[in-house]
Length: 252
View 1 (spheres, rainbow, N blue to C red):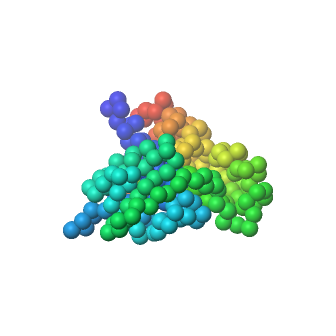
View 2: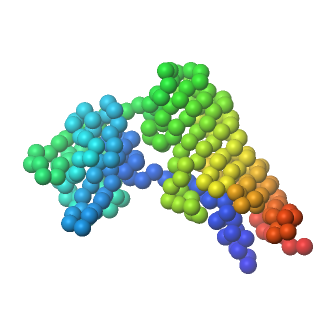
View 3: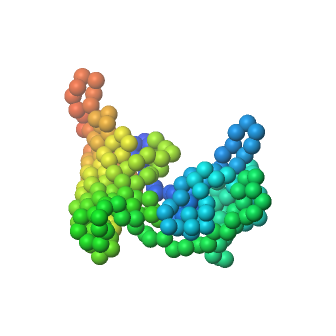
């Protein structure tokens, strides 16, 4: 029973982390994303999307392209992670060579810096803006100052949940300073947290409310309620409070 409660909270509080896959990080570096796929007859890599004005688009890569080789490496049967390793290695030389399926001539894509932000509103300098953070795949709408999120706004991003994985959208609404979410409401798939989070994880004083009605209130650390109370609704409709000290349930 020593770690039973922490195991329970581990499930209850998601323990969210932002972990983009290789295909996503490649989109930020080379201007495209990909996915290793297969059917009954073949295995291949399909280009999913192209970022405007990035190296991939200017080199002539297209959404829906099927690739046979990446930097002279046959990609048939390789995992997304292995393909990501091959592409990441190309950073050292500044380009990547791909071969489309059923075509002889290879295509060389030159690495090109792309902006951290893509503006989705009329202006993305100061004031109220809507931007896409290309490298972290975040959509932010709100006050913007000195090239970053500052003031009141909302941030939507993908997170990985140990309970509800693999991916779901997380939305944070509240106060930002220098691109960091200070405090407000973080909405998860089946719960919300009112307070401060780090990387989407409840940290500090706050209230975590599940859609089921269970409430965790107090001081959180890395998603765990360390000091406070757990409030549950019993079958008769009455609420029951259980004290939590140092991450452990205190039974009466």
